[in-house]
Image (cartoon, rainbow, N blue to C red; front, side, top):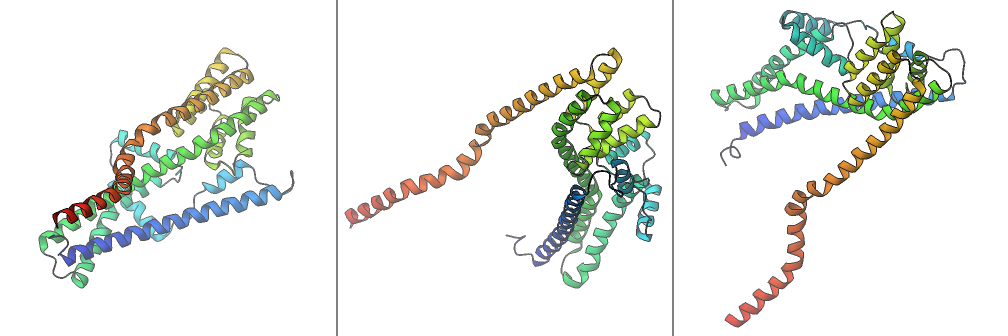
Length: 327
């Protein structure tokens, strides 16, 4: 009751909720524009005849999407702050850099930008609250103001970590969805007589609009091989960047096949069949867990409503008959 009767606290909560909804709306709008532009590009490429001048290869698309853009003044400010306050621990630096790579962020100043946002966002949120507080919430005591400012500072400090985790999870899901199509295309290409490097390049070209994240990873793997890195190390880097068990198993299979000199097409065919079996087993496992997961919502929401519908008429008649007898 104390919190409900405190208008300044309610106003602070509403302001915070307003800013969170605005940020969520802007993010959803950007995602919608990205998906729409990708769909338009896919439609245009499908209408373009094969071999027509102007057709873009996956390598050109990869270079354009990850090329260094001209940084603005705000970006330079955030980057300079991040360079000053980023930790000197090499382990932490490698971990954050790998997280950014797994999220698909490959800008040269991505790490400094991340740490700059991580340190500036708490100051911005707390400063905005302290600026708004005298205008709209002058009756808020000093202790409550300090607690709200600390809460907003903590939210601003850990919000980039949460965003990065969500970005990694979203990208992993997209890559996971593209593995079956890429694997089937790779089997077809290798059985048609292509080498493994040519098959990877062809698969990346074919799925660059349907599964762009997986296409970028395959293109990067092909670029590492063309730059002189061993195929074994390039495949290990692919598994390390994606951090997906299926790609890690595929990379291990290709490395062992290359070392032992066995047939790549036969190994890929066997792995494709095994992969389909594993996907079916995962689906069956998820379906088997559904009855256990439905116990809580059934007992909490559906069963009480059914009891009310079934027992309410009988209880009403019982109370009416009991009231008539007592009268």
